[in-house]
Length: 68
Image (cartoon, rainbow, N blue to C red; front, side, top):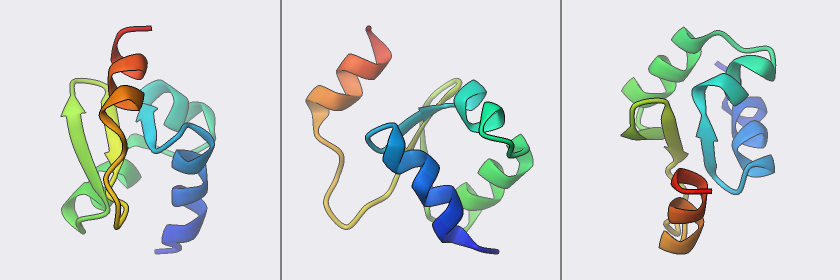
């Protein structure tokens, strides 16, 4: 699996992405679930996912994404 192309989608959304944004980027939701199984992605809440960078995504970014 080419993880970098999926990481780029997360990068454009500051590391936090909605499921709909991921699918609009042309990827199937099963890929997102595979990324979670492999430890690249964490589910924040229903429909919201975070890329697990070496440095965690700032809480302010997470909050602004969850509560726009």
